[in-house]
Every structure is written in C-alpha cells, then in structure tokens.
Length: 496
Image (cartoon, rainbow, N blue to C red; front, side, top):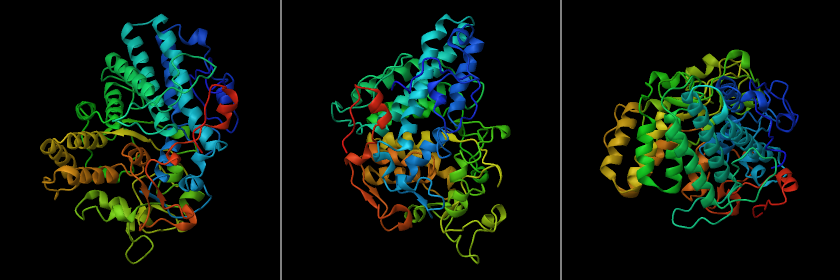
C-alpha cells in the first residue's frame, strides 16, 4: 500500500489523468497542499469535491473510468449482462474469469488502488477537518461524507478481495487492511469480521453527522449513508436493519415513471436517483466512460461491435405488460421485427444483436458523457422486500414488492407467494431492475450462489467456455495486485 496512500494527494479540482502513475504517487499540479486545504471549511469542501470527481475520471487506461469501470467488471463476471462480441476486447478476459485472478493484471491494480485512493483522501479530511475554520455544520457535513466514503470503499474492497461474509460464522478469514490514518506504509490484512465492524462504525458515524442537505446528488447525504448501511446489513444477513434502513434511505425519492425509464439512465435529476456521478459536457472523458461500454449509442469500437445484451433467460421472466421489457430488443438482428428505436439512435455500422439494451444512452454518438447511477430508490425497495422475506415477514415483503413492481407493471398483482418462492420473485425483480448497474457479482457472492451462463445467449467467442463457476470456489476472491505484494511486506496473497 506504500504507493497507494499518498499523504498529500488530496485533489481539489481533479483533472483527467492519462496512463501515468503520478495521480497517486506525486502531488498533482492542481492539488491543494495539506497545510492549505484544511485552513477553512471552504477549502476542505474543495478537497471533498476531489473525491466526488475521482469517482468517474480516467485512471491507467480507458477501461478504468472510476466506479463506472468497476461496475462493468462486476457485471461481466456474472451472467445477466451479455457481451455479444469481442469488438476491441475490453473486459473480455474479465468475463472469462481470468483478469481478476491475475495478480499482474492492470485492472486488478486499478481496482485496489482506486478504493484505497478514496480511503486515503477521506482519511486526510477526517484527520484535519476538526481544526478548520468554519461553521460546525459544515465541518459535520464534510466529515460525515468522508466517513461514508471510507466505509463504502472498505466495503467494496472486502467484497472483492476476500471470502464472502458468512452470517453464521466468525468470519476470521482474511479480509483487507483497514486504513484509518493518512499513512503511506501498508499494514497486514484484517479479518473479514474486523473490516465489516469498521465499515459499520464509520457509516454509523456518518449517519450521525449528515442530514438531507447537500450541494448535488454526486455528494453524500444521510439518505446515501443509510442506503450504504442497508447494503451492508443485507450482506451480513441483518434483515431487520436492512429493511428499516432501506425504507429510510428512499424517503423523499419517488419511483420514476414508465416514460422516464426510457430517458437513458444518464441523468441524476431523475426523481428516484439517490446518488450518482454528475458529469457536465466539458468534462468529456471520451472512451474512459461507463457509457463508452454500456450505452446503446456512443460510437466507440466496443459499442459498435459489442452491444451489451440481457441474458435471454432473464428477459423471458419479464411480463409483457412490464414497461422495463422495452429496455431490451429481443429482435434487434431481424430488421422486420426490430424495435424501431434502435435505428433511430444508432448508425448503420452498429451491430444489432438480439436482446441488446436500450437502457443506457450516452449524450450523443460522439459524446460518452452521462451521469452514472450509484444508488436508486428502486434498489432500496428490493432490499427492503428481500430482507423482510428472508426474515419470514412474507406479508410485509409482498406489500413492499407490490408498491415497487406495480409502478413498473400496471398489471402486476399482489404476490401470494411465501418462503423461497417469494424470495425468488423478489430476486428476479432485483435482477431486472438493477441490470448493468454493478450488483450481480456481489449478489451471487453474498448468497453463495454459482455463476451459471448455461442455456442463455452468451457468446463462446467471448466467454471462451466459461459458463459456470461453483459457489464458494477460490475464484470468487480477486488476487491482491503484485505491486501491493512487492511494496507491503505484511501482505498475504489469496489462494491461487
């Protein structure tokens, strides 16, 4: 971790970095020195804005656009997002379950450093903000957001680089190093239980400091913090907390209308977005963008030759009266049957593959600009419903599910299912609703389910025979990057 946590790498107005290492290893030319950044709360807000911006800038390569890039990795590792062609090969070896098991892979190094970079900068804020000059309310807001970021980043790291949390066990398996100070030397790996305990400590402290106010949806307020806590509780099998926190997190956010489903999932002003990046046109990141790989319309080699599709087995589970069914075109390859929307927004040299998505739309063929959704009210509905159902509160779970699903499908009727049947219904709704938003790998891992692509529309030239991964195998743990092993004598690699 020596080269990951840079004590003075606070970013104020972060610019897009290219392929160099200096975004972590030296002071950026646009950085504010530590002695200046924490003199006032207004300067500290600039440092906090640097963390917000770091969520979607380019890192070592174009396939590493911050959190959006990790979201794509988590999806192509699972079964619901189908890559329909190799195109220019971005994320292909990830889908084959090769990249994340390679300690030398640049993407493994990026993911590790990305989350620890956020932790390192959050730690600088937490350590210094109390001495800044400014209103206490501003100090609380800044510190609360930094604590939430630290919790969120540790939570992502432990889900990727460690064995799954076992709600029935002591979770003494190796997790990731907990970093609570702006240090440059790496420590030993804490246990999974210790990491989750720290995540909960931090997010509880954030909730105590934050309120509903914030400057933009790219910032963290109490709703976002409670949503993060709900995710953690769901992963730990703490059903009562997950249900109540999810309900509180969506307070004040309404589900989008059927027409708003077709607006491209690219705008934080959508009424049900709780948290998301906010990118303006002059912050164009070109090919280093979530929408350069996941959208319908951006004219990149990857999109033109590899339009992302939904697993047809999942698509077949969507009711014909569900508005979401129109987010994918099962007949795109057949001009006589094709959804006309596809031709309206794409160029003639775009491949048209069955079940391709129209969910994500970039701002234009020549612009990959778009806001990336990190948390929506719909996720909180399905968390609440799942948690209630797993706690055997089937009536309440069905009521919450109805409140959500009837907004998507006017013909949906209150479920009479109970037990595993109701849980399966809820999980299907979750898979449909959150398709492409970075959740599926986490869901399979937390529930100890296998990855199964059999019988679907996955392309063998892409997945190269990788249609299965048994639940609980060592392959669910990402390898620690070799750069960390070389720099940190305390680090222990995962099994290979």
